[in-house]
Amino acid sequence: MHCGSCINHITNVLKPLGAKHTDINLARRSGRIHFEDEAILADVFIEAIEDAGYEVTKLSVIDAE
Image 1 (cartoon, rainbow, N blue to C red):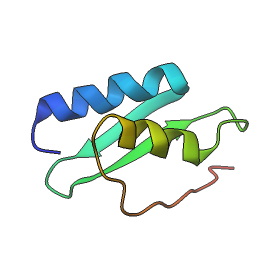
Image 2: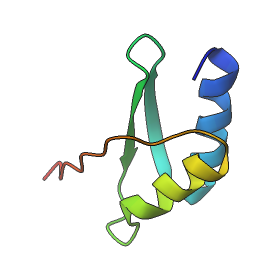
Image 3: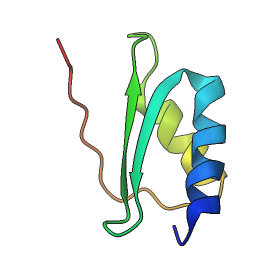
Image 4: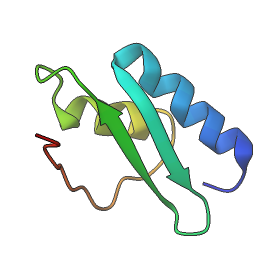
């Protein structure tokens, strides 16, 4: 990720998949995806990000409940 366009690109890729909110930090080269549907697997988001041309190197899934 290099710029605001990268943030917009990732956000636009993830929203149709059920992402309610994305929090992407360019300085840390990291991001968080907030979603509510328990049926959505994290792998779906990872694959979409990779298909968009970005590398996913670390993943933590946190249940908000």
